[in-house]
Length: 285
Length: 285
Image (tube, rainbow over all chains, first blue to last red; front, side, top):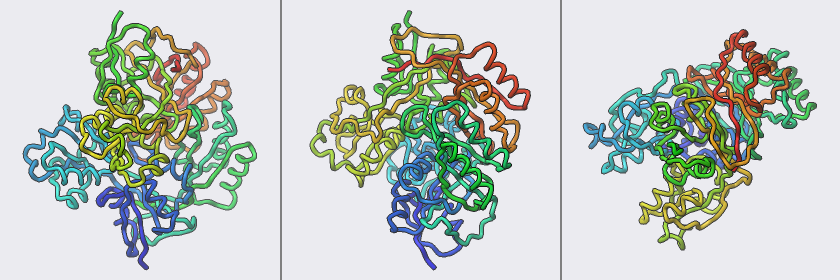
């Protein structure tokens, strides 16, 4: 059965790469201009599934995704794709032999940050210009052969936009990966995939009762004595003022009928807000 | 005495605004292209003080600042400036009466995210282009009267680059503030200011002994039973792979001789890494 998968476009982003590897069944792949539009399209029923970046090993959470799911569009996470991130310096074919003259480097802000040491060393005078994605940056280079510009993007982008890869693997740290979230209106939805399953996860969003010292400590106690392993805890602003946070917690298991419901019931009795953002399996490329 | 203050430029960024309000004594103000270069310039002795954004009430921490201080250039935080953030839509004077035709909106990614509802409603078809700062976005608009572009930036930027403010206060959430860090090689440095002091703070960076369930819970216990109020706790990736984090913790008091040293000594005995990023006072504009 063919279905419609939206992803953070344009073509040849790392999200696109993840989509092409994850779904075993045939899927129509539709790029979106930004993360909110992609998530909104699933909520509106225009597409069946959305795939958006959730967290990068170096840069941390993709705040726009987390915040949009929490504050704006509460779609459940039904799957996770873990993909390796390898960055290359791409230029227009006409500039292959004078890429050292590059005056401006385009890419997603995370990609620029990931290649900071390379840029500092090889292109110390270049300015950085943030693009909405690595794919968009590559597209810009294709469309501006007259400018002294380069993009940081993946191999797919070099192919898609006919660019030359003048430096390979320019990222500062090896073993960089990104987690992509698969979003679907039915929280129990699952998809056939040939990828290797790496873990199960349940993601919770927790708000604290008030600005009291030790409230977070109490929250963690509820998980700790049950030996529920938290692979991640992160604070994000509530958007109500400096110092007000909610917490995103990843538990390394699928939602069960006893332990996680027990912990969340206790937290709610203590005045916390708890929302399950999803319970799902993570697969690695 | 005049001294040299570097800030995240170009002119008229919110960082620049904070610098102009904070220092009572005369200071030479020098814009830097990006946060690492500004921090590096203090470390190299080219300037005396650096002022860079640390955290926004809506977007959370400025990861580049936190990560650069932790991983690359360990300069102490010696002060904090809390500034209100009010965003406006700016266009070239020639486009004042046809701003609705805007095809692309330039700004810092945080500013774009802060005005998401306005953009979604008033300019639904516009693309977003991330600039290195709100000031840089405004500068781009000044230099490109022929393009159908607009910037999101502050009033100072409208003045500095001769732009028209066609919509005021377009940010989605009121009460938005940003914390700016004042960095100086001498951790005991302080500056004369007319601003109102809001709190004292000590910022710690903590690493956990291993990927053991409940380690963070144990860390928080050390603060909790001493009634040390944590106004912030945040996880950031260690850059060694998905799932490895360090934590940034803000304690609402200056470094004392008993409580904080007691807690940090215990954490170190338990195998944690603890680094004091700074102990300082926060002032509000």
